[in-house]
Image (tube, rainbow, N blue to C red; front, side):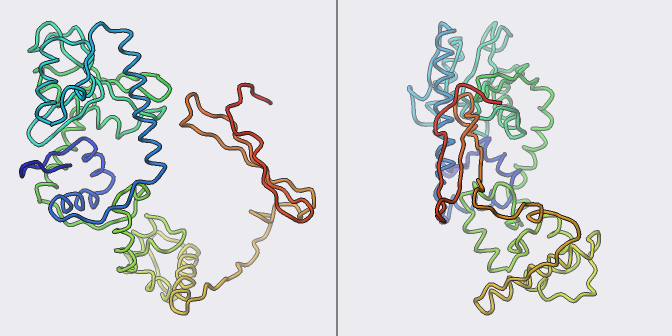
Length: 361
C-alpha cells in the first residue's frame, strides 16, 4: 500500500497479506503516517525477487517472438497516473501484449505482468484482454488465484466485459488457465472483508505467529511484543492450536504455563501433552530467572525410537546428505554432501556443486 496526495492505494499483495495476518495490515496502515522500523529483506527474499524478475523478463522475450505488437508500459512512464493512461492507450490501440499494465479503480491499484489480447468483444472493439501473471512456483497457490482475480476484476471494469480466463505462468514455463467466474465471488467476499478492515471497522489485532512471519518486514516488532507479553509462542515446540486451547483455559503466558499446577485441565488436550508443554515452559522460565539453561533428561521409552534406533558409533561412519535447488532452471536434482572423521578430525566434502546431467540409480 502507498499514500499519494492523501489518498491510500492498495495492491493485490496487500489483500494477500491481510489474509496471512491482519496485524501486518494494521502495521502497514500505521506506517503510512508514522514510519515504523522495518526489517531488511533477507537474502532468500532478495534471491526470489531477482529470480522472479528474470523469469518475467524471459517470458516477455518469448512473447515478443510470438506476437507482432507488444509494448512495455514501464518503459513509457513511471508515475501511476501516467502508467494507467499509457495502459488504456495501448488497450485502445489493440496492442497484442501489454507488459507491466497498470489499472486502477477507486483505491485498488494493479500492476499486472501481462495483458494478452483475445477475440472477445469489449468497449475497445472486437477484442478484449486477459491477465497473465508469472510466478516462480511450479504449482498453483491460493494467493496466486487471489492476485490474478484482483487484476481480472480491475480489467472487467476497464474493458466493460468480464474476462473468461486468467493465466498463471510457472517457473518451468508451464501455463495454467483458470475460469475467472469460478473465483470472482470468492474474491469479492475477500475484498469486502479487506475494505471493512482498512476503513477502520475492525482494527483490533494481535500479532499471532503465522507462516508468514519469517518473511514479514515487521517480524522484529512482533517478536518484541511477544517478549513484552510473555506470549505462549515463546514456548519451544508449541503449536498454534495448543496455544488456543491453553488460552481458552486461562493460560496466556509462558510463566503461567511453566508454573501451572498438576491438576490443571485443558479441554481437548491430553495430560501427557500438557505436562510436556508445562515442563518445557518451566525449563525456559528457569533459564530466564537464573541465566542458566537447565537440561532435563527424559525417561527412555520402551522399544527403539528416534536416535535409539541408530547403531553404535564406529570409526568408518559416513554422514551423507542430498539436497536440491528448486529455483535452478529445471531444478537442481542432486547436491551431495558428505561428513566423516579422519584421524579424529571432522571433515566435510561437497561431492557435487553443479548440475548433474545424468541420473544414477
